Length: 328
Image 1 (cartoon, rainbow, N blue to C red):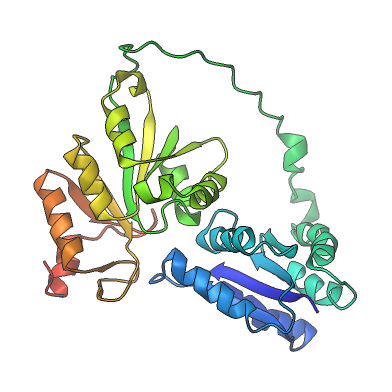
Image 2 (cartoon, rainbow, N blue to C red; image 1 turned 90 degrees about the vertical axis):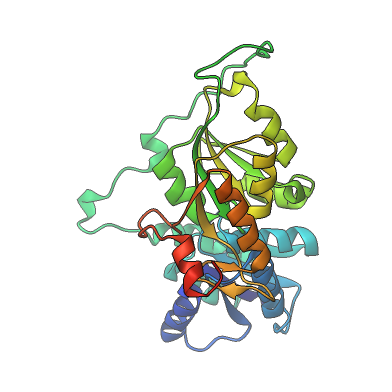
């Protein structure tokens, strides 16, 4: 039988698994894997592999995931690429019609691909509007295809565009880098021209680099670059018309960029994952003494920090949070 992994942010996967059982009865070889605020990408990766290991048949696995580009999807995508099983397949946009259809389909299907093909249209058709006459026309019919970008030649060195300096509209420290919250909520809030993911580790890891680029929101270019490249383009006036969102994996990388001459007036601390030896500061942030030392060094450069996971959250003071844990 095809095994099913439900993967989501928060408890959604566990809740929809329970809902599916209410409709279709208890199911074997179904696992709910959830991402909690204290987890990093590697934690999610391990939980997914552990879930698959419980299945009676590990050659045929269907992943039903909540959101394209989020950490659950990124780690599922990573596992599919790494494990290279011919019949491991993922669908995003997890909803109850999709799950119930999958339970029924796998009873007569030999492969996860067969189940995917059968449930895909039903999952889309499960989105309805009441009253029916208010249902919008399909997006594909209503929105014309975007014209391809006009080719651009190389801009001569020394050319000054805009102000001659990159507009760092939003700078964030986030262990998960580009994921669902950033790709949706923050991109809509900031409306950048480009997202710069700055990490030496990721820039030299083709798999992680590919996953991040795939998580890009529509219409926004994503570049995964090493710290040295950011330092270089920061000094280049040809990037002066760029409104950028900049993502760092940890404060140490941000400090290296500032040592290279890049200045960020304000930085949001969105997520710093917990690991051994770190103290939990709040639901999304964990620090050790090295992290605190680095944050203080960045502060001494004139950078102001604030804590805010999503735009709707209230802004918090990182120094107050650290003081409450006797770490400031």
